[in-house]
Image (tube, rainbow, N blue to C red; front, side):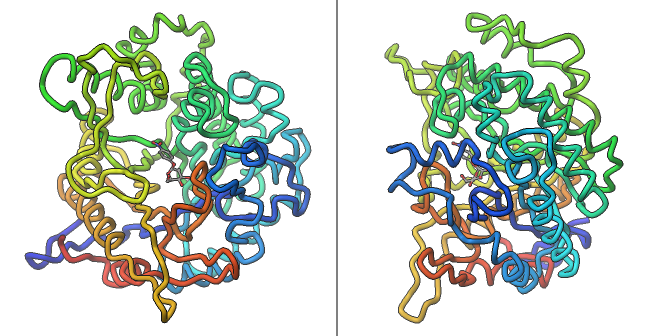
Length: 464
Ligand code: PNW
């Protein structure tokens, strides 16, 4: 259990996982090595205007070649878990049926290196790098992609199933569906609210088929899915604002939580989207597949959403949220990060309490939490990032508060281990505990990394 030993020291449970997270396309580079074929992010990043400064993940941090050094850094920090993702186009080139043993071999070696360092491997099967050939066949708007995902999950499980401690089928299917197929701000860059809703269902189905594949392979670790969830709050208690918050909560949180944890789509959200779709893409039996039991709930949290209903009748045609063109998003009062995202740890606390209240007493992991700041080395090469220390301390205190309130919270993964390719923002945003010089690929542990290591060593933080 979590204890507050002194007035100002927050001690974590003795078996708490102190982790850090990354994703394949964001850190690996070596996009042509060992039989990898292009993913939708290679294609998207090659299109002018899609990524800030024309950046791509072709080289990024060079982790594919430097993974041993990076695991040594994890050991130096004292991490008890590391969350990475497996690149589908390395394992099944072009999305086909063959298993590319050379590509899978990289993750096999990484897992062994982690275990030798005393770091629990946590693997995500899909962190947004869909094989381009599957996109050419319709991508996540094609139901067949979900079936292909199940086959891919089986291939990975056969090789790594005895050594991974925690599996995530998908990372943030909301982003894949609503940014990848809705606004087009993420790969593959397609647009349309109906596309986003169809993709949502096929991603949910893929999750279920992935769970089934992991179970039939007899994997020893826990099985879950990482959802980007958040607390959605109305600006005022005016009915229109409260309804705006209900609508966004449905389309961000409950459209994933309820199919996965209860086997049903939320009725109010189904009614909200009825003008766009009758959801005839949901077939009999799908929700049984989607809702087969999982071992934990995994959430990625960055900021709460503060919303209102526009009173002037203007519509936001660029919103990712179908039927929410009248909803406005506002920053929470207080500091923001280099992403412009609000710093508000109460949103994480409220999310964790809400999961327990609405979905029961389940093991929970925070599989991502962190902040971008405009880190610059000083003359002596050190990186001082006190804002990131404040961010981490505040959010770990929120985690501690949730544990004290009875949430069965097993671990926390900082996003990210390393500075990396931040999707549409390219290398212009740095989330790492470890700084990467993109010219030399030198790594430097930031002050926040040293702070995190000290927290791990004492299994405690000072209260904010
Ligand atoms: C997550 N949004 O992405 C991803 O899991 C990471 O790969 C990423 O680097 C990290 O958070 C920081 O961005 C998100 O627009 C991207 O709400 C966009 C949103 C949320 C999460």
